[in-house]
Image (cartoon, rainbow, N blue to C red; front, side):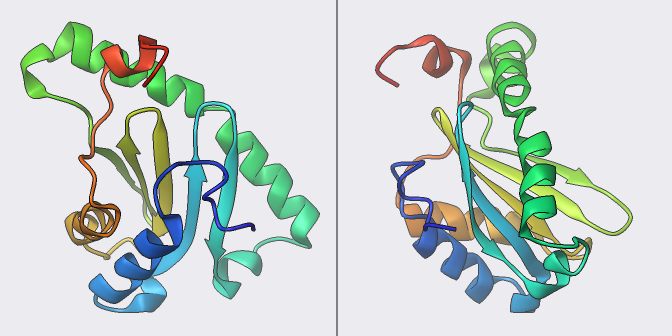
Length: 150
């Protein structure tokens, strides 16, 4: 865990701190990981999450498997923005609600922040905290994914 700023251009530590301050119970944030289609860095991982793995190597292997799908995420964004909902604007975030976990992927261009939250944590509050902390427009589009300087 190196701080994530080597992976993305926004201040990941500020975003993570803002989420923890904004959600009702700062223990609701379990994992924060900066990512691009090519790489990722876990910048916050609580003891609750670590308790599910025998060691850091097993946890890293699991997160490597999760990250393999980041390219699919970015391709899907292009499909939604360019083909299915072109008037909708860029995809700011995707939330997946599960019985014991909510997974949120927040996007800005070709970069993102993956969060795992308690299932009852307020997703909108977490996303707004990221927006405020990084002082940058959220959203990824198909154009940004195909542009070489995005």
